[in-house]
Length: 604
Image 1 (spheres, one colour):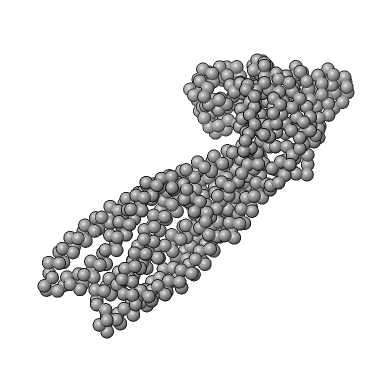
Image 2 (image 1 turned 120 degrees about the vertical axis):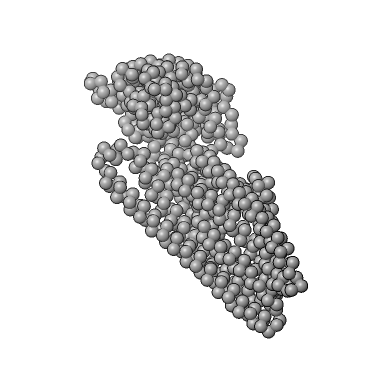
């Protein structure tokens, strides 16, 4: 049994992970970022040293104030005022330098960690298999890669710096409060649980609402990506108004979720500030009574007041940054879900090696497969065939017969639920998918052109290829015919998805990729479908040259393009129903003969 049989779908796995995350509602997701930060230990150490220096400089100010009040205003200590202010100026300079250093180190550390995190998320995305992308929404994934990592960047680069500073000040101020007046400090410490517990409890609601807001934004982003990606189809259908209204609704729902989350964070901040300063006012009233009774000096009370204000303001700011940290926790949850998602198609612990070089022998043995989104419907059902090295085999049949599924399984975008697929006698399920794909060149029906130059788009097939090799492949696919008319030739930018090129020109670039790849196996899926009659004839000649000595599998609905195939495999309903040459299949009078009669207008 394959892995696909024993695990849930990627969408189910994500949903399960989300449900578990909502149950935990802790800062655990943010702790997963610690390994990223520990890559830069020197920067972390420098930030901590600067943090300690800045905290000590700040905490020394109330001590100086106490000594000035108790001694500096006495007639026999007039000179102390000048000395104290001179020392305070030095302390302030140290505080400023240490604070600036801490801010720089923590902020750049946050930027560095998020850059590494984005790279890790993208690396995981490009490893995930067809089963995942059958159900995932590209816009939502893009939102996680951009918007969610931005939340984390704000938390690490800004909130973390503020939180660390205030945490150090709070701990230091509380310690000095205890040294100054244990009795008053006891009252303050007794009040802390009544402050912290409500903040923690309410913070859970903030995280939940923040997570919902991020999900709503991802939904809006996913819809926008779909519409923008198919904008010409939308405009051709005069569906701009429908798309606009739908997105406006999505944006409104995202706004409402964000407004609710912001309201919760604002209320959390207000409650935190009120509880902190109300408790301080009460404690100060007790301290004032102690000064009046002579059990405490005015300087000690002043020092205690300043430390209490530092502790209160630090705790108040911590409550404010807690909301931002909560937002980052929700984002870290969503990113963590992606980083924990494993492809169902992956290399075994000890992958089998393919022969060197690969000759290109292909065999399907009793292969059965259902797509994860349609588990009850067989896309292939007991398919068996062999292709000899260098043989040219065509796959024909009506739409939905399973022809493209054969290609996807051969490239290990999926693994079959039953049967084996062999490459030079080796079961590809035991191989590294990348090693298998390196032996295959594909010309798909739906071409993929990137926002790069013509040269860069062709070189995608073999990044190490020289300019001369790229241009030779382009000439073989007749790319040079239209490159000569482009303003910068091979180095002309073609726009996103090749928007500046015609369908035929995009197809020729993809054919040039296949020629440049020079793999022992060539897969052609309606490779010339977007070309006009003249270009099709010329490119077919180029393909004929590129197919020499290579095992070639061709999918074609136009039977005229497969007449020269060594063999034709006829598929219907996920089964292999017949095979032979064109003449043999026409003579049998089966499905192929009926298709030929429709296309060639001859008697079946």
